[in-house]
Length: 73
Image 1 (cartoon, helix red, strand yellow):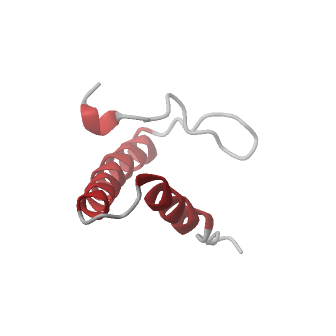
Image 2 (cartoon, one colour):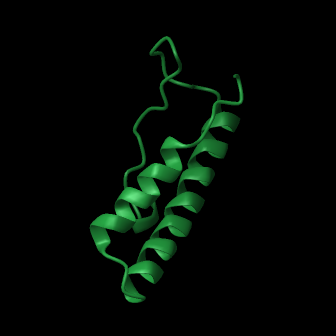
Image 3 (tube, one colour):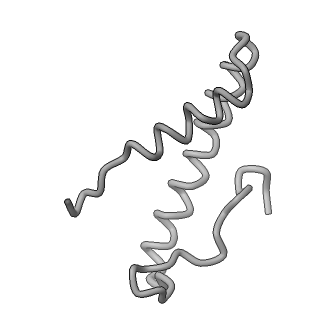
């Protein structure tokens, strides 16, 4: 597993708990995870280097995720 695979889930659960199994969907999910990991890592590192408190930046990033709305809504 590469550094960009950090935190990659072993399965991507569907609402009923069964794992996503379609290869194309799994490829997209993996690519998105790797891309997001890189973007979040860069944003986190930039903020800390510029003097933002690490714990505060983690809360800010968690808040960003928590603010996402479902496209099914």
